[in-house]
Length: 214
Image (cartoon, rainbow, N blue to C red; front, side, top):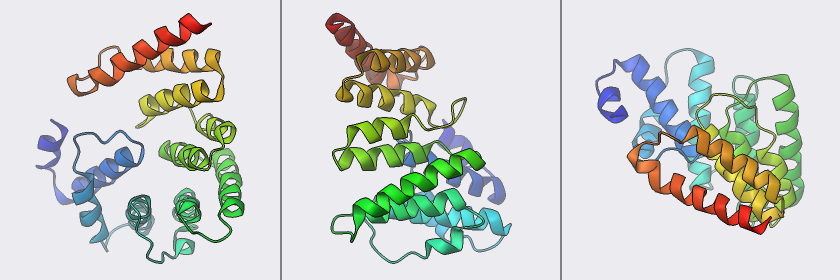
C-alpha cells in the first residue's frame, strides 16, 4: 500500500520517501519495500538543500557498506551535515572481513555513537548496526548494551529494536530483560499487518518459553 502511494509522489517528497525506505531497510523493517531502487535514485540526486543531499548520500554509502561494497568512501565529507552517519560508515568498514585494526576502530565507533547520542537525536537504525557488529564479534554483552543505547519513543525501528533487545538479552542470559523487551514488542504489534503476524506469533511463543524457564 505504501509503495502505491509513493509511486505517485511529486519529485521532492519522492526523494524523502526513498530516504525513508532506505532507513527502514537499514533498521530491518523494510520487508516488502524496494529499497535497492531507492538507493539508486538517491545516488543520482545532486541538487537541493546541502544538508539533505549529504544525509541522503550517506544513506547510500551505508546501504552499500552493509551489503559488502568495499569501495573507498570519504566519510569525512559527512562529518558536519550528517555526523551520526559518518561514524556508522566507519563502523561497517571496520567490521568488514580483513579490516585492519578492526576491534580498536569498532570500539572508537561505539564511543562516537555514545557521544553523538548525548548531543543530538539520531535515527534508531544506528543502535541496531552497532549491536549487530558486536554480536558478529562474539561480544553479546556489548551488543546488548548497544541496542539499549537507543533513544526511546515512536520511530521507524522501535518494533525491530525491542525484538532485537529481547533476542540479545535472552542470548546474554538476562531472561527478565528479554521478557520485558519482548512484551513491549508484543504491545506494539498487537494489531500487526498480515505480513508481520508470523514474526509476532514467534515472539509470543518465545516469551512463553522464557517464562517457563523462570
